[in-house]
Length: 217
Image 1: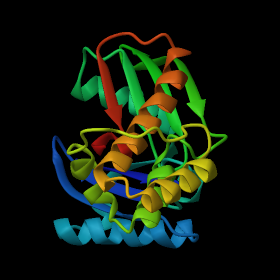
Image 2: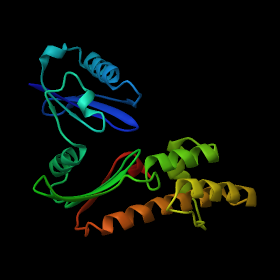
Image 3: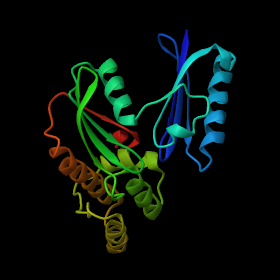
Image 4: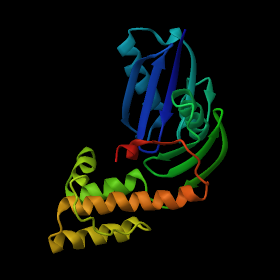
């Protein structure tokens, strides 16, 4: 029996088809037309398997655009999905930090259930969008930023409270001749600082897992 999950996030859309294990997955950017996008990514995933849609027994949709997945049997919030997914992969985890494209969340988990959560969704600081803006200013690809930042020997301080202010600071640092890796070290530290302040409201318990695209940084 085959099942599918569709996650239409603020920045990226993901689909997975699985039985006991994942047999197909597709990841791509989220556009404005969620219904068309949902059909496209599911079609791409089905082509990987060679099976017709009729063989999918159940489809769950999650993410910002979950209500726009026309073929979903059920919609579940991404917070609930995180709790169940994390518990399945890492049963000892009690706190999940999810850093997505437009927001960051702290989720406290017990036996696969959400027992508390906090969210930063009022500002792009501390999210993937923050990194995208910084990448544009620095002329880098997102996937270059993490590895390059590890070469930093002297991280500079970058604002963690506002993306606009941080962008201005980065432009100033470039003009001063600051090394790229030191600017990137400061950018990642700014995100960590922002997320840490958010997570402290949750009273973190070990073990901790970090999810979302920014987890790679």
